[in-house]
Length: 114
Image (cartoon, rainbow, N blue to C red; front, top):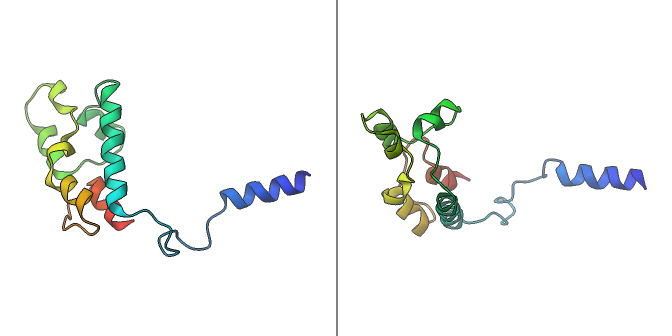
């Protein structure tokens, strides 16, 4: 019995032999983008998001537009909304499978790559 459990555990957590998108099983980038937007909106309902300063301090990168807000001399509470809500990259990523967006550290660009 333990040998079967070990085998099953290893097979569940081992690296797949091929990437899901190569096997045709990966989710489309538009779906990933819509899910990400919905998850962040739902997170906003439970309270404010972390500020951009806190995000950078924790070691995460922010996109070029968020960087502009981060360095702006504004109150800390103005640095925590979901800025992607008004960004054209979000709209393009949710509508097109291969959107023409190339901003560094943009999560929607990462969905396009995966």
